[in-house]
Length: 239
Image (cartoon, rainbow, N blue to C red; front, top):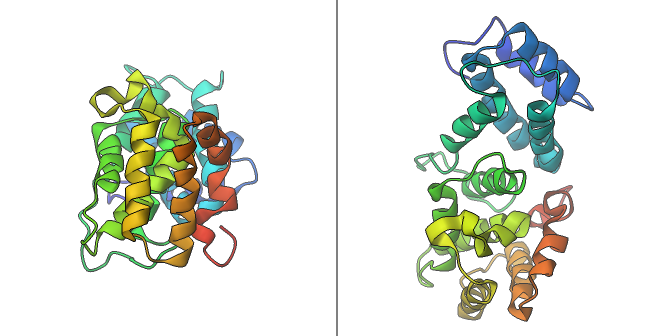
């Protein structure tokens, strides 16, 4: 968390709220007691930490933010709405990390770039935020050079985002990053043929994405519906 907490012990209180079976009520109570921008900032940071701690709950935690925004009991955050503040805060988080020696590179839920990809995909799917950085990360994986040692994780990160909400790519919502599903499938197929992805679990993810080669975008939606709960890179444990 930041040095300046929104309110005393906010980090711990948000952690407790997100750990609840249904976090909406305790989170609402905290926001009602502290209807400030800083409280929303700490809320978003705690959400990201909660997903990092347990990616298995990523879908439900992202849904929690949506339910908070839609609740009639959500306090007013003048001059903006809770939804707008969350949108802004998440937009400032996705793919903003400067990766260095501390980056976790092993495949699985703790991989730094793949976790970023998961969070971004959740934001796209639940319409929490959408930025050029998120769409650019998808393009980076699709066009990753076959010979680069970083390419494998870039491709798999792209697959995670596509599996969560790949259908957005074919819509006007993607702006200049918009492309046909067949074009995406062709690039994924090229990465598969080139052997860019070598980790056996990651290969499974790429093969699932390659179902797009059939040109049926509904496959995207069906597979993406609960991707993080069922596959999270086949981490060998629970996803």
